[in-house]
Amino acid sequence: MNRFTFQNTTRIHFGEGQIAAITKDIPADARVLVTYGGGSIKKNGVYDQVADALKDHTWAEFSGIEPNPKYDTLMKAVTMIQEEGYDYLLAVGGGSVVDGTKFIAAAAEFAGDPWDICQFGATIERALPLGCVLTLPATGSESNTGGVITRGTDKLPFGSELVRPIFAVLDPAVTLTLPERQVANGVIDAFVHIMEQYMTYPVNAKVQDRFAEGLLMTLMEEGPKALNDPKDLDVRANIMWAATLALNGLIGAGVPQDWATHMIGHELTALHGIDHARTLSIVFPAVLKFQRDSKKDKLLQFGERAFGITEGDDNTRIDQTIARIVDFFHEMGVPAALSEADLTADAIDPLVDNLKAHKMGKLGEHRAIGFDESRAILELAV
Ligand code: NZQ
Ligand code: ZN
Image 1: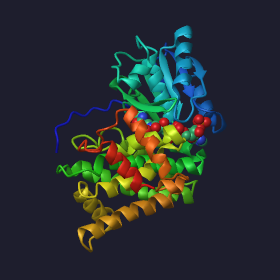
Image 2: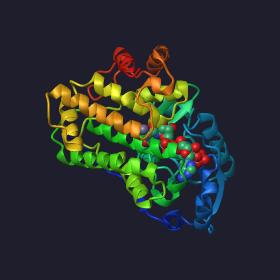
Image 3: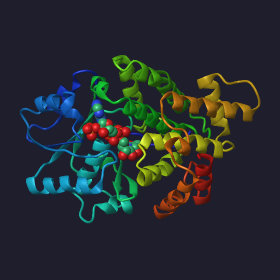
Image 4: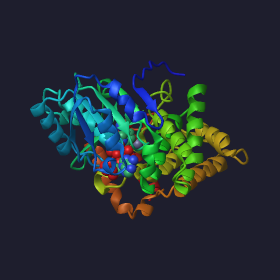
């Protein structure tokens, strides 16, 4: 196991009715800006629950944070904060709203051009405090330090301990109104987050491996159930907690991490508008195929522990393991190849150009995926 320091300070309020808990979490004298997306929270009662919890607070709202949150939209909130003087942010929505609000929190306090935070990795020295009410289990953004922001065809990550939410409400009941597509997206995003931290090479980190395998198997078990029986709250609860633990720092501590699938996937969203999770389901099988030698030990371990694959030589077992993962993606109704998202090999050159523009030339757990290797992965994904 590698050396690590682990701290996750986000207070989690899990379960039905927990939105009420935010009353005590936000200082009584705070001036709160509530941020949200396109309005789903107004249709499913979440907005009303938040308004009720904040009835004794001073607050205003900023709406319209879109999926794959856009820099220009977020900067409108920054202007509002500077003009009207808010000092606490409450994000109510999915990963896009939480990510966007993290960026707003940092940009409002940034002494320079806030886009530098994403473009050049400029250090965030200060940020407004923020909490969140999560409505879509997927990204892990509710208790981690990262975010991803889009400007034009640039979709870039940023991160800082200062934007980790102080608290996160995880009420599985609010996820019952998710469209089927978003349920599937959430399960797949969380699944690939775990894989990015697990499917590398062994460092004898038994706790992390078995936590990761437990989360992966939970998602493979519960994901299809959420599609087949969309009213089952227990299923939603297990998915929601799995998605948070998938990317809250726990399973990634002390182990190598990959993230090539994500970085290549971001370019697919930036250039083709494909949902984040669906870019991952397209790219990940190709990453496994391309790296079947360097990931061999973990592929064999996962195949045996998750699917009971023990027969045949290593190559056969690896083929079967990748096929089972692709089967799971298809069961969840997401594409597992570029062709399944109506793209051809013609898409590859511009994607590699974007990776070059974003200096994504050393990806993967060995930093061995350069631009040629990303091209080869995309060719395997056709
Ligand atoms: O905008 P509203 O009206 O709220 O509708 C949203 C949106 O259209 C809807 N929705 C959310 N909760 C709902 C609901 N509809 C009905 N009932 C509910 N309870 O779902 C749609 C998609 O929402 P979005 O927030 O975009 O989805 P997701 O949570 O998958 O977030 C994706 C974003 O997170 C980034 C992605 O790149 C993408 O921009 N990521 C953030 C990460 C992080 N911070 O650690 C890691 C991830 O890898 C990912 O990159
Ligand atoms: Zn993701």
